Image (cartoon, rainbow, N blue to C red; front, side, top):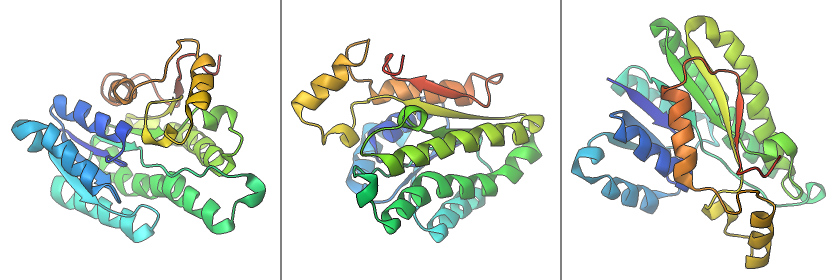
Length: 243
């Protein structure tokens, strides 16, 4: 029984990743918090067969007890996970000087601390089975930083450092750990930009367009399921934006 855990499943990238793993026959647990309508639509889109492989679970990953409840559910019902994709993310578009401490903490709780706590819970079952994969969804802003997104950029950079260090710890057990760093993707997170700002972002992308959630999902699936000799990497998928 192949099992995947995907956080942030109600978002565009998370939903596309759920579909990709289910198409490969994985029992897939999709964590969400405020996206109940999106989860319902996702489950309906999977059809009868795919829907039987999808197990939505609501949890607030900004809280330790929310993370624990998700881990408890997975381990009690499936015993292990073959792929842990920490994709849930919170964003903050604000000057650093105006960012409040509680806002900074919230970004790090969702983007970094929840990944740390989930990894701690799932490492024992992975090391016991001598296989598994962990993938953190970072961002190009974790590589190069973004103005007005200091908290977000810092948290995504932290995931890259965490992933590189963790990969060295888990490699002897046959477990891969990687980070995926998407560029500008056609999601709700980028809906805040007006047409002029979007045009500028596209102009700065050599491929001349936004990426799609499905393209990111394809890479996530590849790194977790088809790339046993890739670990400790921060894979950038940005259409050439950072070249």
